[in-house]
Amino acid sequence: MKNHFSIGSATFIFGLVIGQSLCAETVLTVERVRDLAVQNNRGYLTAQQEVRKAESQIVTSRADVFPDISIHGSYDRNLKIPSFFVQADTTSIEFRTGYNNSFGLSASVRQSLWEGGKVFSAMSISRLYKQYALDGQAAARAQVVSAAEVLFYQAILA
Image 1 (cartoon, rainbow, N blue to C red):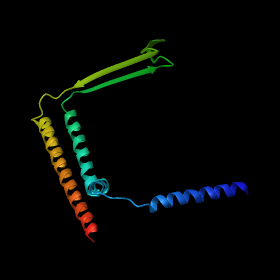
Image 2 (cartoon, rainbow, N blue to C red):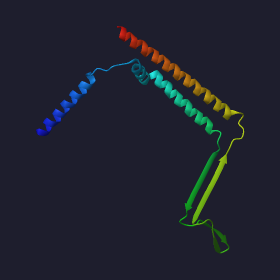
Image 3 (cartoon, rainbow, N blue to C red):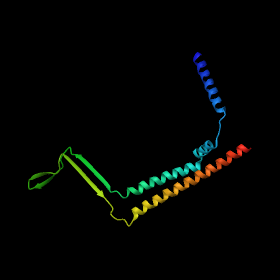
Image 4 (cartoon, rainbow, N blue to C red):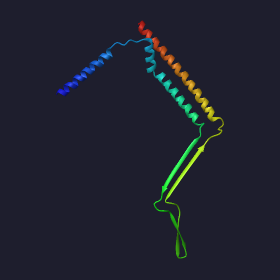
């Protein structure tokens, strides 16, 4: 019984503290309204994601300039050495092929020397797309800030 009372009273006190903090007055300034609007606007957040996407496309296009390097390895363990038999008159001869252990290693490097300007064109397009995304982000921010200021001043004048 005592545990239930202390848990109930702790919940009640927690509710009072949260309720008072939610009911407390918050002073909003123009700067605070601008910041809140930019932080919570979907259009601006989408524009930020578009800039990140453009930056990742620059990295992807730059990767085509560097060589592709591949390394492959293998190991085989034969429990029995493979063999085949040849029948000669009345006797058979066994020929063993292979080893108990066999290792393999290969490496390859591939570098394109010329692909008709494809690589550098892709890099240029990626940079232009990033600039486009940055301009879109700036326009979205300006629009959000302008709308927030209008609403703020309308609320003051009301």
